[in-house]
Amino acid sequence: MSIITNIDQVGRTVAEYRQVGMSIVFTNGCFDIIHRGHVEYIERASEHGDILVIGLNSDDSVRRLKGKDRPFVSQEDRAYILSRLKPVDIVCIFEQDTPYELIKIVKPDVLIKGGDYTLDNIVGRDIAKKTTTIPLITGKSTTNIVDKIRSS
Image (cartoon, rainbow, N blue to C red; front, side, top):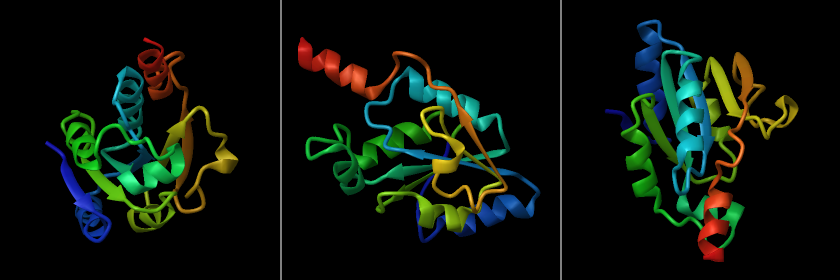
């Protein structure tokens, strides 16, 4: 089972893994209404190192990014669900609109984002040793799910 932590404690937790020679992979997102696309993305991200850290946008951060009607699922519930996925080692909720401050603390060996990002616009690429993208799965998105529900 994964650790759910906060930005004040995540640095110590990551340092413990580093001390025993483990590599750290970081990705982030809102992960509102977790679906197959999220799970496959997380599985593929975990293949890039030993420990997968997920930065999870707080409820307030999601509202600022996605609109006042989001998130649909609370940060506590999203963190709980993510922490139960086998590839996930650490979930850390962050309040900012970008994970830059969290990435500065984690200092990942590998920073991963979805294929809808280009390397030059990935926040934190100046901190990570390596930055890469993972292709998204066509048709698998929270937006598609929400649109389908709203049109029903």
